[in-house]
Length: 424
Image 1 (tube, rainbow, N blue to C red):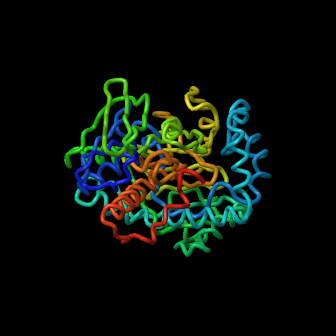
Image 2 (image 1 turned 90 degrees about the horizontal axis):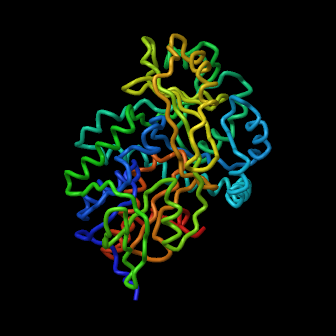
Image 3 (image 1 turned 60 degrees about the horizontal axis):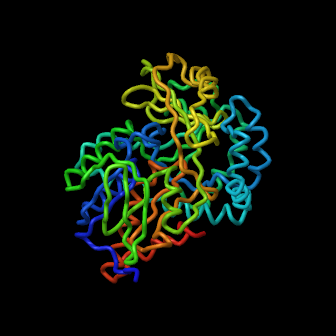
C-alpha cells in the first residue's frame, strides 16, 4: 500500500537536476532539515542555467495570448525574428502546439496571467532570502528590468504585455526618450520609449550563482553526485527507486528538477506533461568602455544585452527543434550587428557562443506539485523562460506544501499549487 505519510525533516530527498531550480531546492530543503542529495549528469549550472539574461523579473504575460497565432508566420519568415521552428519538430510536437493555440484564447490567457504572477511577484524577495549570508549576495543587483522600443509602432504593439502587468497591479514605469537616456546614457539614441520594472533583480553571473547555491547546499550537509539517472520505479509503499549509470538509490522522497529532460521521468511517475525543449542562444563580447547598468531588452528585435561580470552578453531566440540537435548559430550571428547598433562602441567580436534548452509549457506555467503516481515524488520543472526567476520561489512553495502536510497546519493557504498540478 502506498505510504501517504507527509514529508518531514530528517528524511532523505534526492533532487534530480543541479541547475538553478534544483540547486535552489537543495539549499531550501537542507535548511529545513532534510538529508539532501543533488544529482545531475553534469556539473551544477552547466545546462540552461548557464546562459540566461540574468533577470529575476515579475511576469504576468504568458507567451500564448490572443492574436499571437496570426503573428507566427511573419516571425518564422523573418531572418532576424525571434522564432525558429523546424518542420519535423512541428509534426512531432503537434499536441503541444495544438494546446498552445487553445491557451491563446482571451479567457485562458487571463487565467494563466494570474497564475504566473502569483508565483513571479514573490521571486525577488525569495531570492534575497535564499542568498542571505552567502557569497551570492554580491551577485544580485537591484536595478530593475528595462525594455526599450525603437519605434512608436513597437511600443503600441507591446501594449498587451503592459496591460497584463497593470491588471495584476505590478509596478512598472513608462519612460520617455529623455528619461531613458538619463537611465542608460550609452544606449543608442534611436530608442523612443521604454518600460522599466523597478522590482526586478539582475544576476551578474547566473552560472556562478548556481555553483554557489550547490556549494551552500553541500555546506549544509547535502551530497552532490555527478550521475545520470536512467530509470525511476515506484515501489508498493510509494517510494521511488532511482537507478543511475553508477548506482541504485532508495531515498524517502524524490524531486524532479531536470528542466527540458524532465518529461521522461515524469512519465515514469504517472504524468504526460506538455513539455518541449525551446532552445535559446547567447554570444559573449568584451566589456565595452561605455556599457550598461542593467539588462536591456530591445522589444522589436527580441534580444537582450546583459552586462555580466565577465563580459557583455547578447541573448536571443526561441528555437523549436529536437532536444539534442546540434546548435544552429545563424540567427544569433545575424543579430550581432544589431547589438552593435544598440550599444555604440561595443566590440562585436564574438568571444564565446552558447545554446541552452528551456523547458517550455503551452500555458507558460511550471509543473509544481506532487506526482500522480506517488506523493513521495514532487515535480518542479517547466519554468519556460523564467527558470532563474522562479527557482527560489518554487523551492519555497514546494517546501511549504510538504511542511504544512507534515505539521497538519495550513500556514500557507494562499499558496495554492492547483494551477501548476501535473494533470491539467
